[in-house]
Image (cartoon, rainbow, N blue to C red; front, side):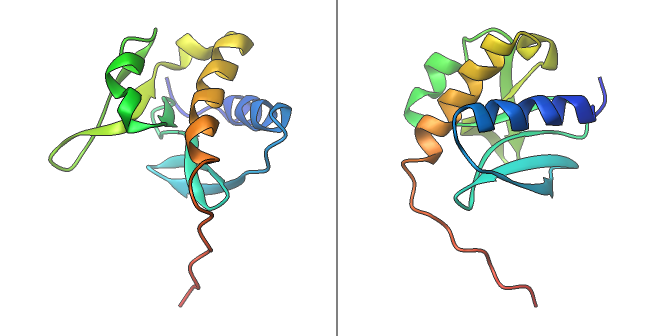
Length: 117
């Protein structure tokens, strides 16, 4: 599957349903939603859903439907997974993943935007 702008809209709506403002940033060849300056969820260039969450829950969450490792650099990134887009077609499934990310990201300190230059 390739990047789908309708999927981006569904994610934005899921974040708004949680009363969370997010900024979109091009990252990983796709779009990432930044919440309070921290990466939360996104879509890769291949159309996969990317989710950041509490690394302490990595083993548990890795067992959820559609989850697979996000590998960057030397190995798997704890606290970040890719999710097959088909696994989040159902709004409830998407809400579950977005909620998982927000649970972690909203507990992080706010990051200020880096000045461009």
